[in-house]
Image (cartoon, rainbow, N blue to C red; front, side):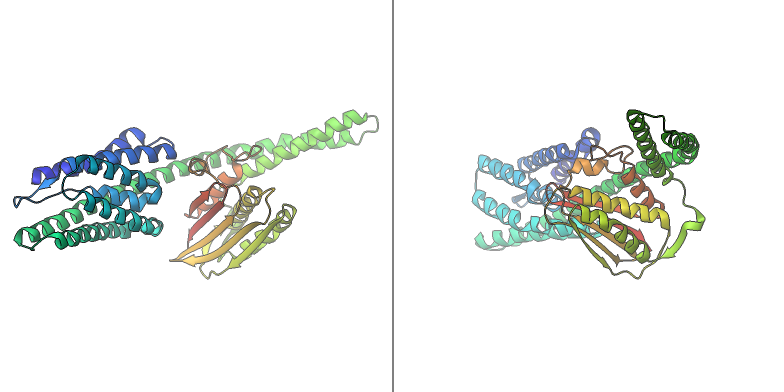
Length: 412
């Protein structure tokens, strides 16, 4: 029995190891298909190599990977596994095939409903939830089994003990491993993002001021030259175009300067109300031009240390991106909500625009990446830099065609 149990546990580790070794850095959409395939192989191996008790009963761990996929991936990920599970079970045949089909259908209907709430929970809570759900699932299966048995003898109670303890132990160990892997991946991405921001910050501090001097001189001479009465209209047009391009270069340099370290005279300790209301008023004319309604609410009493100018620019950039995502749409709404949650200031910025794919979300905040054709990516990079400086976290939720939500958590 113990040899088979260890073999089944190895089957559980199979998709995790294969994914980490070969597919960790692939695009998100590709990852989902690979994980579903590897999980399906794990379930088939568990059914093919069941755990046999000395009493003659057998059981397997097929529902452990099935439940994990349902909780983390919802219906989208678990439906293919449900089909594969039942096709293989009908192929094997034998007693209990119909019962297995009905029970897996019940699990498919109920468990994915908990997915969204499960994902929003803390890691420790997710581990507890998954373990309890695994025990309840196996418990329900045993209850159904007891109804079709003539008598509940000692052998049945031995099966119940081993099945429940095995499912609880295997699920708990797997969840601990998975949550640790997820934490490590998030920490790695956070460190990489921090390094990128530091590089851009150092580049901005060392180069921007030096670049501004020749631009200022050039702009001044062009303005003087533009006042000359001997210039033809065509030459004046060239000079005006040059001045426009110099102004654009000045704006890019200003964005770069935003990455420099916060100035002590700009540091404040506040609840963000003044900054949020100021930036909302600044962006209102821009929203009106693009026919976007702005809904604003403020319910926060927590305070934090931050650079006032940097925070204002961060919020303006996020508001502006949200408005531009709704360009040309009817009834666009930008919702700004500032609240508090567990000693964190929560800034939620939600639009009803074009939305983004998971791959686009994963690339946000990287230097020179923008979802806009004319964008430089510096505005979003500056926003991530500002939140990083106050040890905050930005979470992005988006769906193509339905809009995007930026949720910023700043520790108070």
